[in-house]
Image 1 (cartoon, protein in one colour):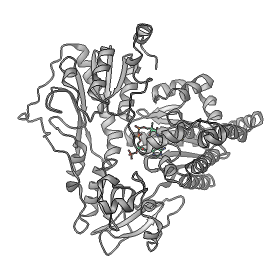
Image 2 (cartoon, rainbow, N blue to C red):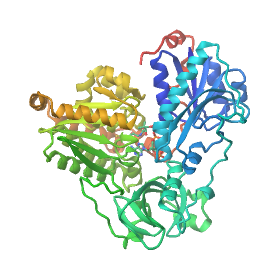
Image 3 (cartoon, rainbow, N blue to C red):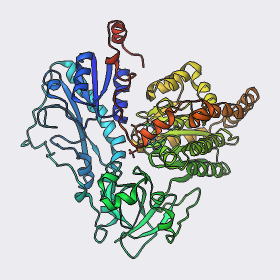
Length: 597
Ligand code: COA
């Protein structure tokens, strides 16, 4: 059966849908919804039996949905319609929300219903709920819908808003006036909901020191207080702390309102200022924040008080859990250095096992491309950043007194995937997506990948994983040895099983032998080829990516990074996704074979 995915971008949900379908033997092709013509052309070429739109902001042309069954995955409960579903659900403080699979029809989101399911809402940013609850529920809904489709006996349900189980309604696009924070009256809870409902897009527009910015990354502050609501009362690791009527909150990131959206006068003064997401203090500048006190935090923060923290640590039964929750999993030079120091502190403690927990949404996505883009000399900053992440990876590899586990709950990309392999064991949540390739960013890659990756998966898979810019699901990751095992989807179950495994390892009868075996293997590996040699060879290639004019490389990396940071949409679907574009007589039969994922 041929399934065409029409999507606004190859985002996490589309990646997961792709992998789940291919692993079940379906032939899948993907097209970005670049225009009506592109969508129509892909349907003409692929002749799909079914079309699924896992993430679609555009309209599917009538010419398509009138001839083909076209299922829209809508992040809302039955009856919910409109483009701001999750935004309203968070703003309205709902305790339950859902995902519905419905047919594309004249009225958006009002087509016949094939499947629907609900989930418990979590107090978190919209993007985080999307990456976890929505994605997990969407996959269930897609699989249920597929079963019904295959049965050929299912009649989808017409949307009837008068039915008691249809609780959703038509909601308009949520605009900035509805999102606006009233610092004089809004409580911490309300401010957090407003910022969460707009995170990661479009952000809440607010005025700081007379300029307009979108706010992102809100965190509750339990101890600090200020007199004037809205006032910036502290700064820490790029974030700003602002007073509220009943407490305070941290905002980690700001995005300047785009220049073409601003008044003429502001446009003049804003020229050459970055208009993409960056740490708040960097956007506001040192001069404006010079009187704002720095609010230090322990390197290994072990307190329970709520505050803005990127790295924290817990310890239980001889196991140390090191969390590093960097916004979007991006790790700047300074963040890598801080992580390395925190890890080396964790190593000094009397534990037997260290668990690298990463962050909720992303374990790590490698070097911080936005921080590199904004640097005066991006090539130099790329060099500093890659060396800083390499240092952190090295610190993990060289852990002689503990066994180390990478516990991957959020997804991981590029160098972030490789970093997981620096541990002795890798466990991942079953629904995690890993993108181990550096290709789309035009990079050769470092983080000791030439040592760590073949060691785990062998040369053949190492080449496949780094050469083909496709995500890998955890079923295949386990089969090829990229990870050791999967963990449950739900956080509480995930944590319980992880703790059990980590403590089991710490208390295992052969712990000393396992540690000795690891140290001996490291010694042997080092004698064959030192880690410094792997690093030097990787960095030599990276120099060609960073300084193409000096070292004879091409400019792909700088261009790819610019496009990534500025969110420049690709003009066409990548050939490795758009199977239909390869559909010609010569390879038609090849394509029809089920893909082995
Ligand atoms: N640096 C800066 N920001 C990054 C980042 C990085 N390395 N990786 C991801 N992000 C940001 C994205 O810009 C996006 O920001 P926003 O949603 O706040 O606007 C957010 O993280 C989520 O990323 P997105 O690309 O939307 O997620 P995805 O699930 O569709 O794709 C990846 C995940 C990992 C495939 C993709 O983010 C990626 O290719 N990242 C770059 C990896 C890389 O090349 N790192 C450098 C080499 S080590």
